[in-house]
Length: 289
Image 1 (cartoon, rainbow, N blue to C red):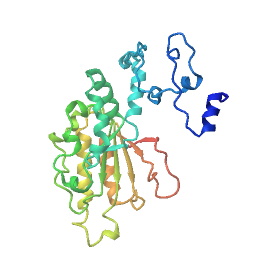
Image 2: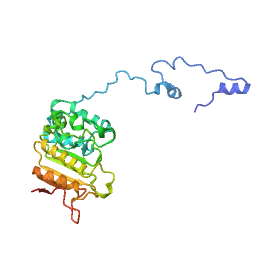
Image 3: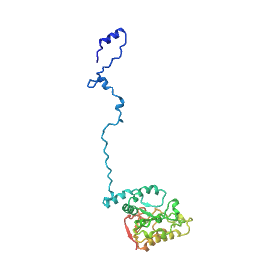
Image 4: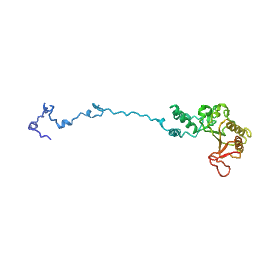
């Protein structure tokens, strides 16, 4: 701290205000010692971070190295495709939610020829395709999902599903087996799942039936036509709602046509199947004689 000079004391004593202290020319001269207080008086703008630093080194950009997915072993690529198509639901059918559910993920098929071949095989071989739609507006559609597929897509399908019960009093006109359905292209299909929702021969349907035995005959003929058109079918898996009995008219008709085709029989997980006590496991296949 500076001590006041004698001149300052004299000024205060005389009642006059001291004038500004003149700055010596030597203060700003090169090599002269700067005032400590003046040295701290830095312009605030000099402290901002947006002031460019001259000759500052520019950050180096790291080159983007693409991941060579196709150089992975095919077994790993197939596993990645399975994860990609996970949580899609087991059964494919015409539905208004299909666009949101499948569209983005199926964009993978447009990557390249090899990816299309591998990924499409995983997608179609791991999902069950429903033969005839059962939902809302699509229930009476003239072209089921299978008929809308390309022949090479149908050739990758392993499992088909036939759901019987909807329209039991008046089946839709589109529920027919013909060339347009494309079953003959399903050369990889080995299993048909048949789920019976209801048996119209039950007493609860009395008075509402089209005629006695109408839907049973329709279902039998439909299943028979499906099995006739599939080139390499091996197993028919039956399942049903709890109200459907194995010894009912509906199941008797379906089992009869299945026996005539000489294919294996399997029971689904919902029903079992056994009207009495024990249930058979899903994985157990039985030959019909």
